[in-house]
Length: 394
Length: 151
Image (cartoon, rainbow over all chains, first blue to last red; front, side):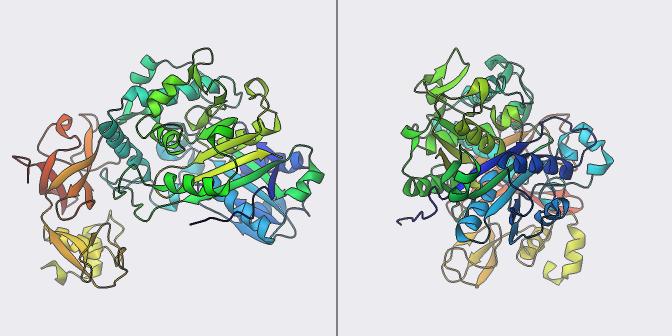
């Protein structure tokens, strides 16, 4: 199927705003965090209430819905609003398509995260977040045997190790890469240096994945302002445009029924992106493979085409920069320079998106990639939320 | 037979499951200790979890069909923490969770736990057969290792 991409480079990101990310925001609601990020992004973009006619807010547990955000900011003329599922690129795609189609001109896109009562002891003690649950349903899988979207990554990680003879060290390199990079990101929650011994000795949660294979829950929020590239040129000297963005899914996506590791959502994303893009892996300056679970990162490295299936561990080893303590592909391209979900915090891909824009603007400080022009994001996992985006400096 | 149990009674027997009109046959089967997997009357394909139509040929003619539950562990993990359940004590050791590829059809999998062997033995490739335990006062399908292996 030849895929069209009339939206190529037509929609730009012109505003960024974030809260601090922390293990505990201390007496603040997700709405408060979302509002802080939104205001920062709006001010960064230099737009006002009258300009924002689209609002897209990810359906994160406890986060304000788009209509609630509109009410908080009293935006007077909103012609597009939606609350797409996590993870981050669903919202990006929705905002992009709404702007390109003319449903609206300028979108506030936001994501707010809050630690859930079941994944944090201190969160469980906060009476105002006891009602907040993942997916709006039950707080936990009803039985231990439910291979829910989260546990399924462990199940397929076991299959990956079995089929390719990979080792826990291969997964561990993902964790080490993120931790080393996080040290250069003031926002990151986990900065304490990590060694392979430390990784291998970490508490087992669901064998074969340990605590350090799983992203770290945080309180925080990210927000973005998007508009037409035409308008962006008037607003900012350094607009970052969406070259291509897509979701991807296969038919058999029930977590335990996935045919195998060689054909799932990530493969659909990669095919769609390649067909819609002039830019591919040899042309990028910074790479953002999602790391909600370490196994997902191995999947993106392989499925994007950096190496063969089963080879991501060796690939990371071959491209390891001992001085940086992390991967530098061909000595040049870092992987999640902000520390990813494993070490910056579990922002379900918005950290990747924010860092991509920050790098392309040249605002990344000591972790700035020299002359970064293009970024590749592989967001989400294998089942229902695989997605990807290519961003570039205009 | 449990067909006699009305929907209200079925929900009462499985208060921890969100049963739908598409999955009610599966749970009625559990009460009779039968593993009933949706099979298409037109193209013969099994599918799971239960859907209102056959995802292969889009036929509405589905029959919940008993399968033996013999199969091979395809995905395996050991939970060191997780949702509570009677008889599951994470303090005493990890709880195995598996997706078993059923003999009934390649790629058709059913997820549960494995009983009757040490957790260390629950690995990908283990040949298993169906068994039943009690979970909150109702039968619950599980697997146990089967002798010989080769089917």
